[in-house]
Length: 98
Length: 385
Image (cartoon, rainbow over all chains, first blue to last red; front, side):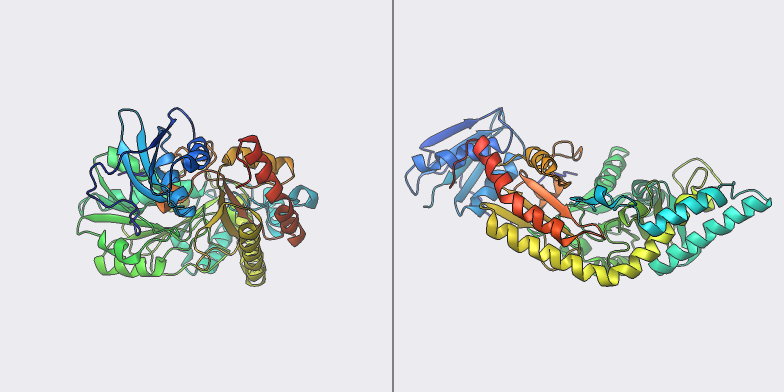
């Protein structure tokens, strides 16, 4: 039983399921050790540094980021590409759409 | 509720509704006249017993059940725990499978965790973006070895009303008892029929603290998970809180009759909040079902703001509100409700209107909110987008 598992049905899956690697990020934001909403603030601040169509990755280990990063992308119409498990925390890949 | 000024800015009725004047009066009278042990045989004891049974009948009347199906507990949480553990125990031979929704109150989820640690199995049914359970998915989770299914009447954090009637129908077909945690709905809106167990809490409807209600419908298998005790029909242990039960019944009847008129007024204020927040606060998302919702509750999340900081700032400005993203809000954190819905878990504010709320309080709140959010964003270094 997982309360914070992905129990919801992802009606709009942001990531095409078997996209093993995808294009590498052109910018990596290190938000490890930072509590939400700091990782989202850092992402919002710095996404303009990557060209439209390119990937930015956020590294975070606050479990709230697993919900907040995809939700932020949905609210801001950015493209959530995938989440990857890291030895510590997760890497979230986002494609800048505008 | 005697002190109206203490209520100014109180927008957290979903945590607890201020004591209803009818409950206060009934409580004081019962403290003086119905304090004796209702299990004894002398005059004062018999009077206390009569008052307790009257209270039971009045609560049963509002809920549309038989008086002997109603037991008073010490809290909504205790009602949930007794219903779940007692049902799981009575149906152990059927199986040890439990179904709960992902957005239940922590009392349900923690009891489910305990059941799992005890060797049982649990299926958690997810929700859509609005926080609503899909009735077909709920029905599909029921199995031949399912001992119990649990679904809240409405969500305590976002106000979304759940498909209780459909779930009850599916449970009836599968011959599985359904527990409805109706803590947020009783007294405020109609709760569909067809369940086996119902749990509720008096302080949510303007009754006193320390009184919950457990309803076990006739023919439902249930065995107390606790050591033997003769009180409350052997369902709830301990000396009965007769004054509390009397006051709870008085509040429920008063609340229920007033809500006919109050619910539309509160619901219109909630619509006003939903509209205003979306228009005046940038980067905000109002969460929960906009239509199938509790009349008095609305929740929104502000990007780039810490929930606790926002609550503190609003408190400073004279408003009592709650947050699912407050780190102290729950031991399940971040909010398991917001997470299951896939919405922003930070910067979350739950506004829930008490019965007597003044619309000017709501307007004052809406007037100060945009600046409060903007100030916190500036502090966090977030410039105007």
